[in-house]
Length: 248
Ligand code: NAD
Image (cartoon, rainbow, N blue to C red; front, side, top):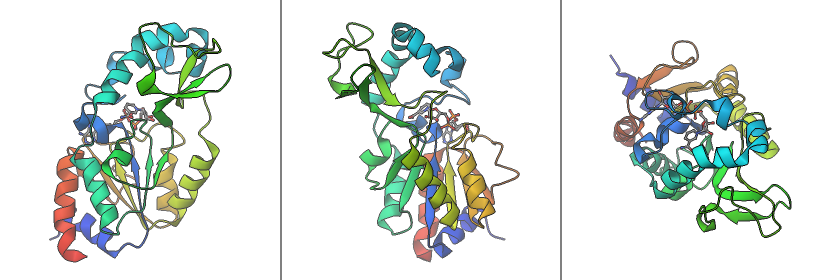
């Protein structure tokens, strides 16, 4: 009898178009807490109080002070872990072309993947609410909060808050890739944030096999996923690549 890892490796070996959808869980082993699940930020912050655009616009100082300042410190220190590096290896092996990520930490690009769709933008950049000037998060001084542009406008992170639209190109490319893939790897996402959570449904409806990797079961696990591998993303991805290598 095939193990679940062997079954997943076989799907990957046979596939021509593989897409990965990743979420906060893939970066947990890099020291970035997820929103939901064990140790998630939601145990500390109420999402509607801090991560909604209306709240930010009403009180940017509070959101910078409580949530964004800490996120900047954590994300700036983070390095790709073996799960990110494993996906870069899959690209080198010719088995993965594009990653759709909900993450804003830039770790897939740092690991070496060349085509990363940032569904929710990137925390590495700030944008002025007044003149739209962009500046690198790394270059901004948070001694005074909220940080301001030389025009006097307040800087916001250039990522998508709850209540905002997904960048159109990211959305349309993700939908098209989901429709045309034959395997989707769904890694470290609670699969409840829309519209990102629709991508595995689109892929499944178009005939793709769904391989899910997560520390806990999700709404996809017993309905949409063809193989659900439960555990830490880095350990599972290493095992998966070891099992895949003799098959390709
Ligand atoms: P989520 O926080 O809702 O869920 C995280 C998921 O990861 C959970 O299902 C959990 O079981 C799983 N998980 C935790 N540790 C894991 C591990 N070591 N290996 C495998 N799985 C693990 O994340 P989401 O679905 O991405 O949605 C939250 C939103 O929050 C995203 O849209 C994203 O923009 C944002 N976010 C991003 C980051 C980041 O950039 N690293 C961090 C926190 C939140």
